[in-house]
View 1: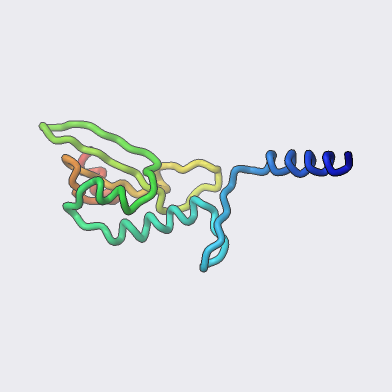
View 2 (view 1 turned 45 degrees about the vertical axis):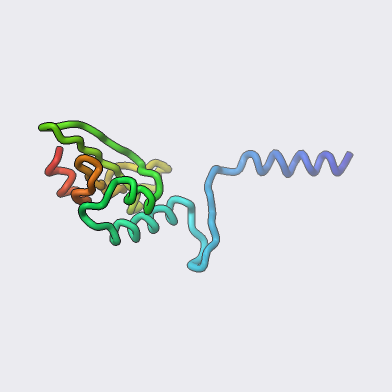
Amino acid sequence: MKFLFLTFTVLATVATLPGCIIVNDDNGWYNGWERDQENNREAIAELNIGMDREDVLDRLSAPEFSEAYSRDGEEYRVLFFRTQHRHSDGETTRDETTPLVFRNDTLIGWGDEVYASVR
């Protein structure tokens, strides 16, 4: 009976822990989002204008936000990737992301200036 009680107590405690993912790597302890944003920054630094959207997506984590629209017969997609921490509120906001802008599935640039030029 004591074993059953201890098992139940441990399971109940584990079930109520926050949904934070912690990963141990060579650089120390990171939250999952910290690792994602570091990987995203590194991947974006290695991108080249003219890359295909699928090639870009293979290098990055899932985008936090996305937009798509047509203008003057061209299709635009903007994918926003988390690259910086600003608010400790548990939510990712646009000011914590870097926009990648695609025209007809081809990367035409990234950053706020490029995004503003196609809006």
